[in-house]
Length: 620
Image (tube, rainbow, N blue to C red):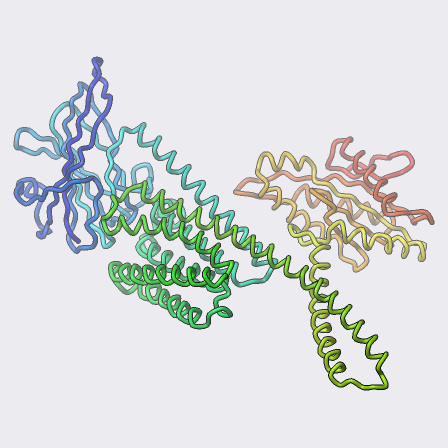
């Protein structure tokens, strides 16, 4: 590694009462290469002629086998002790040795020494911060220097900043808020793609989900949050995660684009070339554990630049050939790749590296994927419209077949071979279309009668089977139990723990209810919101109450957890059991069970009430 020394003049101004009011970091530095690893700090201090003068405050010296030295000259003008924080803006530096030096004329006095870096014990890091952080305490007015010896197998590209303690924490809060929003957007988009993949069974959305996961890990690695929270202090992961996540993001993003633009059916040549490029990203992934990071990064930069150019060429070509999905993808990826190019320019030292570069890259990735998600929604909507259009075409074909059939009957004595062939062709097309529509209708019917959150049947299914269940109980003169179950204080659960916790409660509650709905005759549905309905044919009041009490007891003592917090959950139940009379209707039976549920809630919740001509409380 190339060795560099940064020298910046920092002046502290004072108020009349002696308090420090501000300091300024001058935009210049000097660099020094330490070819002799045995040289001491005192020897380096005496090599004044070996330092090179530079401008700027962002360090970018690439890869080299030698250590890096940083020196900041500080002129302290204050009447009291001053304490500041020195931040080295990179999570990939193997070791950083920090020295605080006071000058007595030309003599250097080392006041303090501290050590940091990702190869050091993370628990010993100051404030367990995501970047190397050091305390720079100045005991009195005078001339000081901050020396840092930086050594790493990763690229030496980082920013250096000296903060007041209060200012540092304010900036850190703003940074964490920004990344919290970014990672939240990535999680929401990932969940959206996961649901699309589960419902539509299309591999396209699975590739986009993995792409979102990859860029999330990539940005977490660059910002240091991954090292601080995800793989907390793991040196092996931190040394390889950036290359692996970047390669994975290009691979999965490219596979998503290939399938989303339907490239295989529109241009077989472009499709094959794109797959060859995507296969190339497997090479740095496989070789990263065995090669120096510099070689892996160079290979990845070459492949990513080539892939980006090829992607824009193909998307532009497809836009000109009226591929609607290519236009959507071109808009989204222009923003995404634009954010990546900002980071790439900082790697080549065209732009100064710092937190603003990381923010711009994160904004580009986030906004780009929002645009791509808009394209996905547009595609789903268009496919639904095409299905409706197919139904209209099937109707028109049916009408055409009927017309041709009538003509055939009128000229049955004068066989017309050409007309017969036309009818047979139309009939084959109609049969294929009808078979397609029947399969689609069966899928739509199945989906329309199930609840996507819990997997139970929904209210529409209950409306379809309730009348038949009543008729069967009438014919056999058997009892029918109607059990209405409602989660208590569900709004408070959503307010206190969030809607994701509420959804998890409903899913676990549905799992519990299914355990008590074992017979083929029993019916369990999610009626709406936090309310469930259970029909128990051929079950007397005693049996219904036994099941209801088992459910209530199970729910009360079940462990509902979300984000390491226990969520208190109980249920109230209304029960109505009867042999359905002649005039019985689903609405009438449900109304009585609902009245019993209302009484249960009025009597304190977490209880069971049975509907009678005069309510009798069944103590839960």
